[in-house]
Length: 368
Image (cartoon, rainbow, N blue to C red):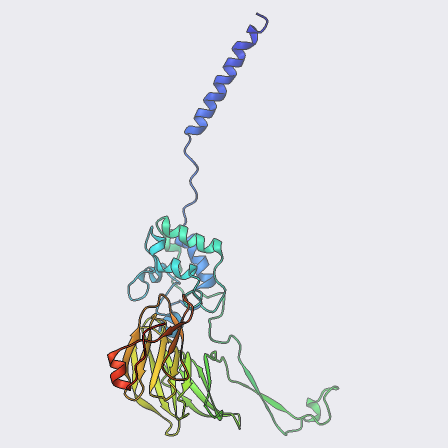
């Protein structure tokens, strides 16, 4: 009986504990804060994306790709009305895919370090949770100022120093000025676009330098430019001299719009028609066959193509690639085309087509 006086209080305590436990379990789990475009996504886009994808850059498709990300309306509109996100489905959203892909030709931001895993996860969570906008009335209609400078434009002016033979006057000299010093002037010639392609002529006398909307020909003996080829769509991503050095092939295009090859006669200093057009995205590579009769091109549209250089006709399109074709190269005998895609190891392409056989008299046997 000595223990019975403790049983009732103990039982009562156990009932209280069980009651509190049941009440705690019955409480709904705390909801995580709702992600919104205004609060969570726009600051991220401002830091990393709107440097190129803003309303001011929209008039320059080579820079913006036709995509505006500095407003929710622009983000939702996407490119030509195709939104880059599907509410609730990140796996089907181009925005998430381009941020998380491993291919250097597809990864965004282009030309800069990728977003962190936490930032990419934030975008994924926002899309999967319904892509809530938040209070859009707080979104400024003023074009947001990017925290980074846009690529590929160089952020600083490039000073070209021109030395003269003019001797500085006494009031211009300092104590450390050498007695034989002469004056120099600095010419502001920037900002300068990035160099996107280089190619020597077969004899080494010329150097073709590709950049945005232009290719400059330099005389390698005098180190002076002798011609500037304009009318280049977007960036000249690849340039190649024909084996005889008389014609230059310029691979260019507008992202997501088209890709083309312009042919330039070095001696006559004029373009040769027709333009080789047919790709649906910008070109990355162009190559001549040994005899100069064929051209091969590689594009962001995931295809490589073979062309008759004499008339600009497309002879064959190689479409079995799951990613952009970054390089094409003919073998020395001209019978094999090596195609490099970012998603695959380089592949030796030996397509066999009647059109190629009929046009060139040569058969490129099946793929090995």
